[in-house]
Image (cartoon, rainbow, N blue to C red; front, top):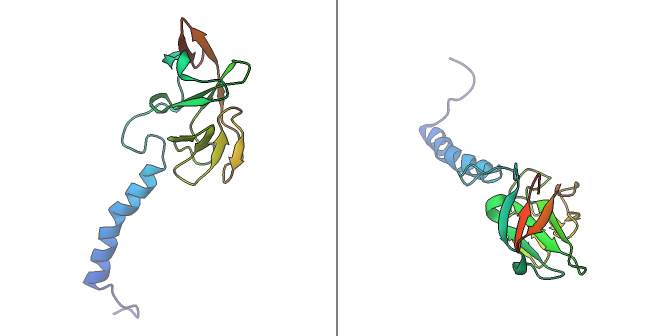
Length: 142
């Protein structure tokens, strides 16, 4: 007989019950953690929507493509990946022109891609973007 007490049935069952919950929390922070297979950023040009949907000085989040597009006061478009540079979580919230990551609270300026609140320290990846016949197109080759 060893000098260590054996785990009780209750301890073993409690640990088994918590394991799936812990797994769900971890998968929620992984890219595509909702169970869907999502490309981190477009791998080619992607038509996102009408150019008229983005006001001067504003931004629009395209969750399905992990892209945010903003329009400067001069009318120029900018696009950024919305995959958080801290832990790779897809950002799903845009408040005005501030992107908010659901995993750890990092915030980014949607007009510059710069970090405005940690824990992220690196800016968002900038993407090519253009207007084509009234539609916004972003991604490599755009």
